[in-house]
Length: 253
Image 1: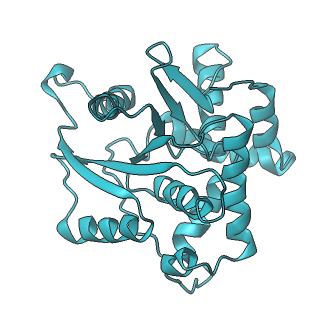
Image 2: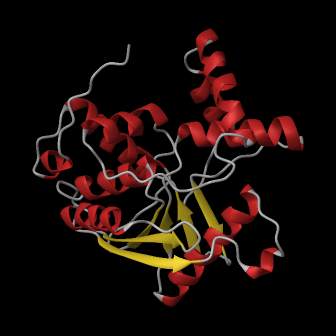
């Protein structure tokens, strides 16, 4: 039987009523930011918003830590509204209200999920590349040099396993990833956070999550790896951390 969760408003967190477990989440994001020197004084950060729990939790963490952080940075958020699977007006307004409460400038842009350049093809790689292209173009037009994505520890582990098992390559997504000779960086402040934490926040604080439409959501390799990785954690609960530490990241802007 599933446990009934008494949903609270995210406004409680915004207004300073932050329980210890949520504070650990915010500080965990801050720890990664400091470890990899992701954000500096005066930086402008563009949040890549999918509407899912992870990107909304990332926005929450980056906004909340500004309340006590001596370093100040500016946050903007961009959400891609796929024309083929549009977000309804009610959810658009819920998202606008959320980002307004977080004091983050929020914009929704309409784009084609299946552009003509795909020539009728569609897969996870093409979708990701298309989404990244849109983000990069927006960043260039608005002179933004940092794009923050909501990838967490589980994403890193799954990517590692995909590359290792199916591409014979021990690599993964980076905490900080450089593009165009350093003119643009992708940062991942949640890279040391478990997915279970972002899920708990979204469920407990009624974040306005809207699940992006994905035809391969339940059949792609990543979704098939999740239960395998979960099984490994039954042998060693620190399996995810071990895989993360095996990469021995040493990246600084």
